[in-house]
Image (cartoon, rainbow, N blue to C red):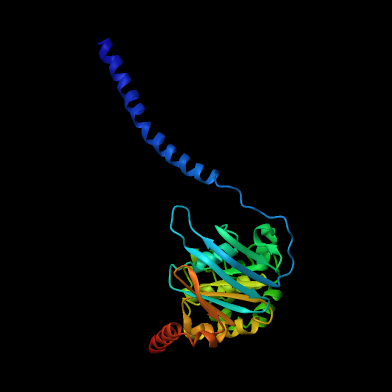
Length: 298
């Protein structure tokens, strides 16, 4: 009886001990994930202050992700103050990666990125550079608050200043098209907005920041023709006030605003110049008009 009693009290404890292996294995996986984040090197902040922007030059730039083949090789791009340049290429050609290199998210494998003809981008203070640079990414992040909150992103300002901002840039029609105007709740990840509306909100957000360089990554990909025409006309006006870097594969919209077009092919710049010069290239001409006729037919 004593043996049976002892066995009866021990068996539940032994079963509980066996079940402990499940949370232990879960903790090991969580620890490995935590270690991946904890072992990431701190972002280089730079030491040179920067207040104004005059020019950007990318020279002989090459880049590859760890463990992969070379993505970019010997890239040469220049952009001057109050100029619009376009970077064109097929999906996966490395266009967005160049944008990420300009944001200091990665360091190039070789080559240089020079600002104002004398300063290396890696040595410029990251805070100063990102205040000068305004980004509209491919995947726009929209928060669950209203339009007002999504423009300010935590900063404080009066509704009068926001209204004046919308009037100056012509966003009144867009705001009025929303059910409750600035008070419209956009929902988590902008569930209440279409893809094109998200991109317009992202443009409002970045222009409110008053950047000196505007980096647009596949910016008009989800817009209808009317919205796209409004945005392109607005960017055309803004060319006299800031530098625009337009990353896109939709060729039909670029000649309307771009001073120079760079064609990225097989990881390198295969052609560049004004859109008039590029139209003389047989391959570019053929691709351009094929896409233009296709979009016109749609």
